[in-house]
Image (cartoon, rainbow, N blue to C red; front, top):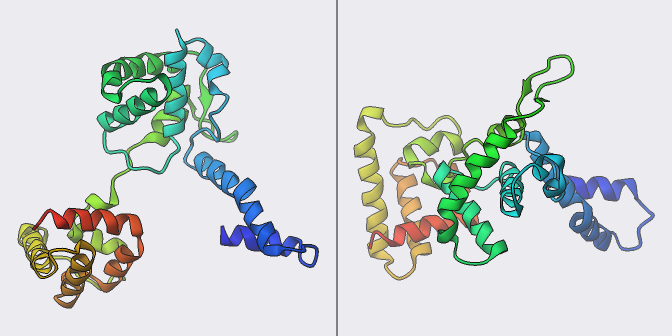
Length: 247
């Protein structure tokens, strides 16, 4: 967004009476939406799904519930939220069904599972679409092109053990323990964090920061990894919540 604002203001240099206001309006009304659409298409999902229920593909489905499922699936294929399993996808779809059609999400679970099967079968039929390029075509079904491939599985970064997460945020100089000793390494990490919780039993945030400091000082975690965790508010809050369970 910073780059986008800089480009927008540079193109209009000297012509804006309120550059700050212009930047805010540009981001809110255009830049964010363009970025979302661009990111969705980069992963292979549909750029926008607000018209999908009235498409020829959707009209071939039996009712509004299945057309809504098609829209939800096309939308979920392009989001960045974690997706661990098919069951997790069904839970999210059931929640969306409850929000639109009323009732409780749990009541939609079985209906969603059956509905997704029907929608998938429908979308795998008909004319194939090109998932490649004009020079190198890759003809696949609509389901494969816009749902299956972009959906994939998106792991939760916060679920990764510290031993496996370290290379991602380290500088390459931190040596991981031998895989055969990973259980011992995990036990050391848990012991250090549990000790931090005992020292700060009332404030999980402070306990987590103290525990991270201890892990870094003992060579169990790269400093850069600890800094990145502390700077990510969502991950830090989740980690602090999990840490409080060690009391």
